[in-house]
Amino acid sequence: MYKTVVVVPNWNGADSLPVCLDSLLSQTLKPYIIVVDNGSNDGSVELLEKNYPQVELIKHDDNQGYAGGVNPGFKRAIEMGAKYAAPFNNDAVADKQWLQKLAEYLDRNPGTGIATCKLLNKDGKRLDSTGDYYTVWGLPYPRGRGEYDINKYDDQTEIFGASGGATLYRVKMLEEIGLFDEDFFAYYEDVDLSFRAQLAGWKAAYVPSSVAYHEISATSRKMKGFTTYQTMKNLQILMLKNVPRKYLWRVGWRFTLAHTLFLLRALSRGQGWPALKGDLKGSYLLMKKRSERKKIQKSRRVSDDYIWSIIVHNLPPNARALRKIRIAFGKIPGTKARSKKA
Image (cartoon, rainbow, N blue to C red; front, top):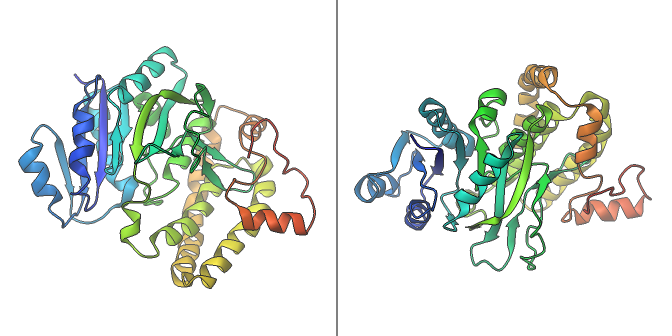
């Protein structure tokens, strides 16, 4: 029986799959590896069947997104009785001890459901993520993204959430809170899962001794307007599902301002149609998510104030336009950073 299952979602990633899978096969803690192919037409399936017979292949006829590309692997992990399951991007490469370090941390900390690594850019010179934060503006962001001081975040610490690109999840937690929400398709489904975990009383941790490398947006760059559409759609449902009622209005009015600004900027950059479609789709999904919200909030085990204490009370570091607006109209009460730096 395998202790861990690693799930690689793939869509036309034949160029990057070999180095990704070779790094997983070289792990000091040997995982059971599953590739979920989302209807690739670039020879990915043929490559896998010919060169990686030891890897289980699940084939979709069409692209079911990141969430739909990971969940079948998670379900297999549950069926197999695995203790842990990790999604791993097809454009990522793992250090040999990446998985072992994460599993050892979860072994030592039974109350922790999520352990994530130091995720570096492909060349190892910049940070991609050292965990995810959620802000009072309804905007999540990856901690440390783009920073060149890769040793800045060398302290092991609890975090709000984790990137789905190279993170280990406790299967017991997944059975309790559910898998990735497939309505997200791609982007922020990992923040949603982390938020649900926090509401259910599970902790998330950053383990800097675990390292992986990632080519940011290698897949999404192939689809024009994809990121804009998914962002406009998913940020709405992320907030509605998870933010406690006591603080929903405080996050909501800030988010409305940010969301409107995003839409205007998309229009000015020729991305108006994807943005408008995403906004409309997100608004439609809000009706569906109301029932899911009731279930999530009813079953939670932590207080409103605990959630308010672990989110960042400031703007994301890259929200330059919103910062200018805030300066222009004066300081907005309640946005000063508390214990976390924005």
